[in-house]
Image 1: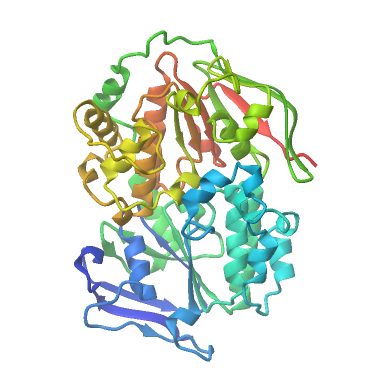
Image 2 (image 1 turned 45 degrees about the horizontal axis):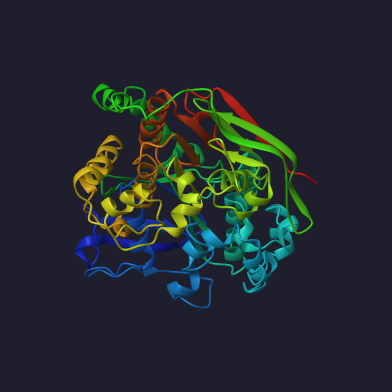
Length: 487
């Protein structure tokens, strides 16, 4: 067995892309591996060095892609990050998704997969194992978060890469889809054509077929070790640590003034016998649901069951609400209220939002955009009351120290934490969290979960939250709605 990649005392040429210590890494061919570390530990920087995205200072990377005919990294290495299957215009698609008349010219799943080059792993097999058959005629912009990930996996695997890096392959997938994906990746490994490297922040996302771990911590790359030894060491450390917010931050949240007329029990969301379909597929049929102020709802269901569609109605993003019997905060849609009157009462975060926020601006400005519900743009001067509100929540989430940093230079986990803090900055009456812990490590998941619990213990605070991991729901959850696919 040969080594597919070797770096020795590697240092990125550009200072801003350097790890804290030079890296020594040897990746054997045809041996699946997981790069594991906390958010901002250096995982992404390491992968960018290994793939050549960040050129090295001095020492070159040694590649051996045999038996591939080419030894070019660009032809043999693929990286799947699940950030944006829509190209560079994710923000536009975020808006277009719910405007039915603007979807006609968008590509279908079949169109996307036809553009990928064929390999010995037949697209029919990909389609079957990843459950793509029902999605082939679906518009790409109408895919759920989990469906989108399955399509991206199929697309990249059709090109038969010699080395494949996958960043957090299981986020956004329901239990069945996670098993299907794991089964398929096991087949990829068994075929021996592609060396698979997963990048994960959650140790539970290390699949059974991976037995070797490359740990990264605090900007330092450690030697490859056995998974059993790595997990034993990790669990020993975690037993003695609590990541919940401290008493000072908890009291600061509880001391925030209540909104005028804040009370529990009044209707926040009322859906009465609504019907929504896309093409020939019914999403909702005679669906009714009421959410009252002070309630905390867990919203779940398999990928494609309609969770994102329902949240788009709640958050005033879907124009179909005007044709449905829906009331938000006591006002029936289509009776004269503006979407901004509704949005000023809602704090929202979603995987689609993460894809659409690609603006070159500071963390402070990204978080401040939550004050005015703009999509990543905040042109006003941030001072006085606005700055105080934003910095309050950045500090609550433990990221106040990076408020002046460029958002695009953060790790993906840090970016997600910024967008989560953004959902809180206007102290909303309704908090809508669509898979808010995507890509967060255990420390930041537990911190965020305790913040949500504390926030929702206040009078008049309502929560609707989606996650495919039961343990991620906050302890204050007191209502549940499970959606099922129709037909």
